[in-house]
Image 1 (cartoon, rainbow, N blue to C red):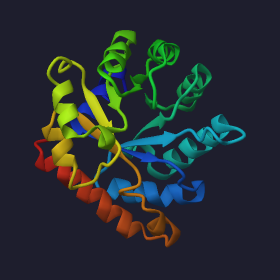
Image 2 (image 1 turned 120 degrees about the vertical axis):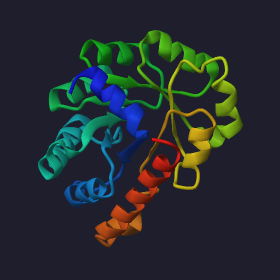
Image 3 (image 1 turned 180 degrees about the vertical axis):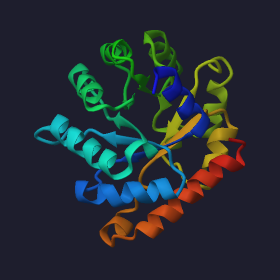
Image 4 (image 1 turned 30 degrees about the vertical axis):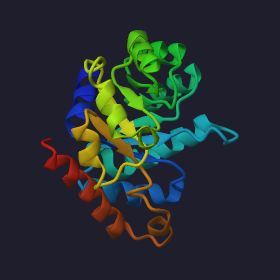
Length: 220
């Protein structure tokens, strides 16, 4: 997929699901469950506490790709360095999310043709991320900031598409999207620890579908 195709898919689907602390041995079945539930975008996060975050990411992405092929558009999250950007590109990831705004990371992602979604919290950070070349900006932590904050940002900064993460679930999705967000991202509200532990992939599929349907009710 081209850069624009990936960016458009993110803005059209409006829901990015993320793998954080999902055991690699659970990823194949969990990914199939997400696909059955209607999810199209998956972010596999870097584990910055790992002895080798890059190797773990490559293994996870390969595992998911072998399980679902092109049914999920795969990207990366918690990308903190230029080297990790390069790892994502080499492994075949198509988009990047970060918890922060790092000009070097943003510019390297754009050089390699990846859709870049850095994290920001304040108006100054959001505007800076956009100026550095972000395609979309991740507002984080959105649940701590609140819906009214998002609405206020969408006034002067309405030209910058925002994805909200933190506190996203089927009940809050209409609030986030209704207050100016262009999309949402979540992991724990779908990939619940107890469901993964019990290998309850039908439960994961059901939660995924509930999130997708909440987005669609908002006019996707």
